[in-house]
Image 1 (spheres, rainbow, N blue to C red):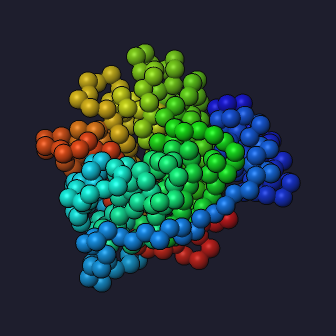
Image 2 (cartoon, rainbow, N blue to C red):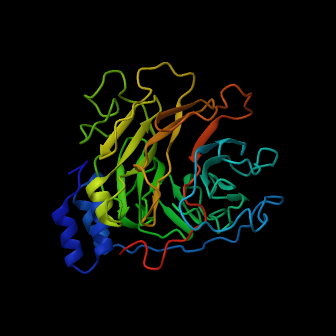
Length: 381
């Protein structure tokens, strides 16, 4: 049943005594069929809560003034983004602040991702599992020296900016700080080597993984709405075959979650009014679930391929609503530093006119609610 969730099979797993196994089974079945259910129910998943003994890089900003890194008490204004190069270079635009980079350091492996911890801090992740913290971003651990040659493909911050996940090409997920572990592909016995990106749900109670082939895997309270591997459900805007000519074969490079304000926190919000965008290297954007169609760069000449997508930050975090629809748009980022905004995502700047020492590999938006922990009991079970 490739490309859809087998609800009955997932329920059977829950009856057997594990709701977590049911969610994991559904994620695997979405791409690999009912056979994955056996691995989900019988397999053992090991949670790494704080692996590694790595430390922040020498000279990284880890102790800013208390007032500058004060814990937020509610949703904050956020209207900016960062770009990260494979050499560790960082470029900040809009409300995003520049807090340093790894561009002048010797790296054991190239940088592959960036995630924001408020407008005054961010993390960089390298393919070997190394994590580098800057500004108000707290270092909570890494997978440096522990990946056994399996490359990390990205880093995703919790919605509150006080934790992060690393994801590997094989779909392994590693949680640090306040980030919670909800499952991974190796733990299900699912074998892939093309996971390229990860996106978290509004309450941090789940996440999606996406492969270069368009396969989508949902964990925790992240609902599955379709994929871009073929004739997927939803409006694939030039990604899924048969939807637009000339776009087949372009690898997927990113995913961003959508959450409509005014719905109940927890699994209901994403099941009823949630969704996600999937982005291809050629600029095509697939919309799934309730995610609005804001546009894409499909069919437009690009000087460089797209490398990622960043949604306008949620205006609802931990059930606190600052007003508006969540998110109201997204940015696409290209390898030459080009930035393209859709919906309410305003253009804040580009690195395409800058001489880059290395290509851009990732983008990240300033989170809406930096540093504020969710109240006890959140996210809902």
